[in-house]
Length: 321
Image (cartoon, rainbow, N blue to C red):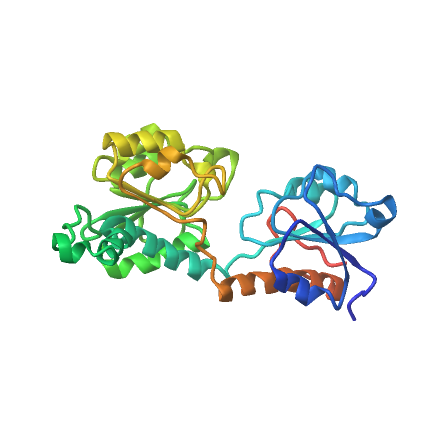
């Protein structure tokens, strides 16, 4: 039976389904996000788990001496200091796989909208311009005959690639080392990939190596017919270089679901031509977010029921208690 004495800390906001699933089994403590947890020493000593959609620093872990598990809402867990957790014997979990399909579907939609301007064309119709001005212009870009490069080929990247195959495009990718069992052409650097393709889809996590990896040099390599799609992290794109590339015709268009300083999007990017911009909605459907919430709850319940979790991150593999 679940240890009903276990106290779970929730910093800031999290999907309400997580709380619904946990509140009958655990004591829930909500605290504001801050440099340190806003708790009395007595409450801090009782916290054995964290359910979080955001960040957990080592400073938080230091204030919570009984902490055993941090369940992160999201496949990316760069906000959680997993290295510090590993050193302290704390399990960290995330929510992979359950959002792969939604993100991959959104990526294809964003790519098509960026190339064919469907949103702009719909506004043209709704504004009455089809009647007053005639047919919408022929779009200068198309998916037909394109060579798509995937920067990152993890679980989501593979799903994107599978969805691209029926469009009869050529597919290549860049990762640190080639993936076994993959027929797509591998390029040993991002620049080499950008030089080879005319469409670049970014789906890499936030790491020191990916910070502004897509810079002016990469955009120039992509070329004047080039299209950039980013559904990974805004961290990976030099937004100033991207604005310049769009305004100067260095590349043809960009579709972005993620930004450097969310929810703030630079006005220069909003004003840039040939862009399709979404407010980080790639996994934002009710079914997918419910599945993510269930996985957060199931990891916490599994830990306190059986000392087992479903999706530990690589830094903190579970050793059975």
